[in-house]
View 1 (cartoon, rainbow, N blue to C red):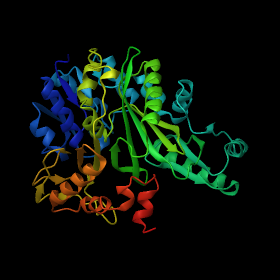
View 2 (cartoon, rainbow, N blue to C red):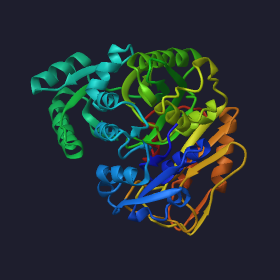
View 3 (cartoon, helix red, strand yellow):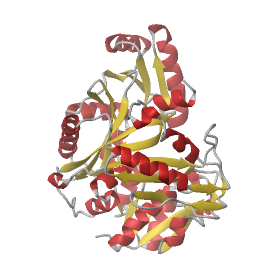
View 4 (tube, helix red, strand yellow):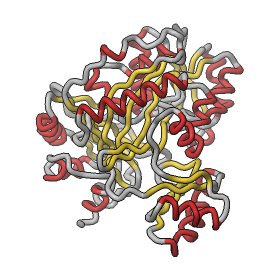
Length: 445
């Protein structure tokens, strides 16, 4: 096992990893920007190192500073959490060159899955169903030919994209070239790469993802699916497991396919295969080669600590269980509580004057904030994640309603009122929603 792990992240995920390290008896190092000097993960870690000023590019994305922190503290492994450097293949390579273990997949797999076109090609080769689409668009004629073969409407997507950037829908041939030009410009500005490709646009899909763990030696397991269809501007807001739209037969078929594919790939650590699901069919869209924000709902229904498993695999100890040991129990829902106005979604940084998280059976709050903590304006607005687990989905919704009534965050605006309204919505109660539902609901449609 590792002698010391450096946590190259901040906020709730840094605290989540720190807790796993403490339970495993592994000393941990917290890094932080000057803006995060009073963060909870910094206060609770055995050691902490300031790695730069508030701007992420000068601190949490500053590879030389993180490497120096490893050398100063003697850390022999780095857990990247999610975001920041978690899917940076070059970071993994630099750590390896300095004989420091990256707790995650190989740089090769990060690179393959980070390129949407190559990821789709790899998924198809591994037997994973994919959305009908094209390779990278090379010319206007190529685009028109590919769109004609796929059938309108088509979705123009950035190969290096994410978070909805570099993504446009073309409903007719007349607007195709304009959509491509706009997507290229957005992709170039956001990612420095204007490569785009086309996919069949599905009008009412669910967003379903399969959680996997690979040992890097040809064996992988799945931990069921999560439904992440409640989104705003392609950002997930509410996640649940299992999906209310998937039956046991469909679940077993797609999850078994994915686990076999990841074993064949030789994948190491935690990963998530994401699909659009419509009319009983799954269509691969991307793979995230890291821990997901919504991983706690999977932990709730399986009892598996995903962070500990990541650490075990990276240390060469393998996965602590077999596929036949995985049993899905009950239902779990996660709400992302953000420091945002619940109506306009404008960020609301500032000092928390009163903080009371809910508790009780089946209630988990993953958060790095506390009363008196000042949420900085430099990073994402996540206050914390409210995770509810209960024997059935209806009991889970009832418990969620009760927990939201207990959740108090004063001094700033939060999205708690949004979730209070969602939990009482008839469509949500029936599990009848798709990836477009929330934006239509917020628009009053």
